[in-house]
Amino acid sequence: MHRRKFLKNSALTSAAVLGTAPLISCAETGTKTSQKISPGRPVTICTWDFGNATEKAWSVLNTGGSALDAAEQGVMVEEADPENQTVGLGGRPDRDGIVTLDACIMDSKSNCGAVMGLEGYVHAVSVARRVMEETPHVILAGDGASQFAAEQGFSRTDLLTERSRQEWMEWKKTSKYTPVINIENHDTIGLLTLDAKGDLAGACTTSGMAYKLRGRVGDSPVIGAGLYVDPEVGAATATGMGEEVVRTVGSFLIVELMRQGKSPEEACREGVHRIMKKNAGRTDFQIGFIALNTRGETGGYCIHPGFSYRQYDSKGHRNTPVESYLKS
Ligand code: GLY
Image 1 (cartoon, rainbow, N blue to C red):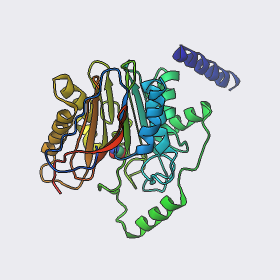
Image 2: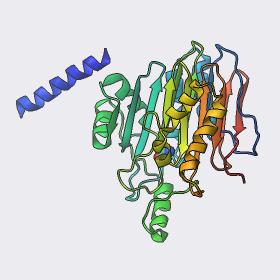
Image 3: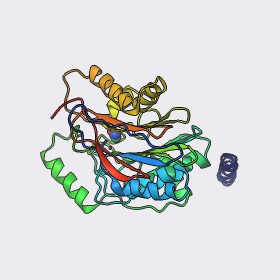
């Protein structure tokens, strides 16, 4: 078992050291967003309109790959895209100009792994998977996460692209030097998969809130908040302002609501409504949930118009608008 090997290796290393010293565009009320897929048919959905990510995940699922591999490989597409300024390479930095990544991954057996505040490694989701598979832990954070990534053989990369650096410099000139809390800066990718064997998995990865305080962690690497998978029920993931998702343990809530009999769409709606109840009168933040149940039914719901989820299944791929709490 990998974890045992890890412990053994860690013990040896320590001894040596000691010895020598983002649904679908949010659209009008009433849009029907749940879709039934035949049992046994794989399906993948992701937050926002990340078509390349679902296409990649689908290619894994459609060739007999596992839900876990599909989830990881799907979000890796966005992590590697320097044009996506909310995930991985090219992500917007924190207030001090440093790009830090948060990610997690979870499978049908409730195995999970996460990294928080990872610096210098593009594929935060893959590091999270190694945490899950190669260590006895669930979360590694900060310098420890980077050290682990190096030990696992990941290559170090400067994640701050010139475009993101220039924008940060501009922001510094005009801002009050506080983190930005608005809806434009949030495009976390959360991706859910159901494979042909009926196994579920999910992955969630982000560079977090643009210009956040150094050390800030959102919902995306927090199992139960940014992502949750339950083999008996389904899976859910979130995008938007992580603080509010963490407060409600959002993705866990959505899965539990599905367990009580709600459809994915109804569960996501209830989750958003609970958040809005705690935030009466506030409209300055965005949150969207998407969910997939064991029957392959999908759904989503968001606070503001403008959110969508991308789906890929045997019928092809499409971007499905979701209903929003606040109407345009
Ligand atoms: N949902 C991503 C974040 O708040 O960091």
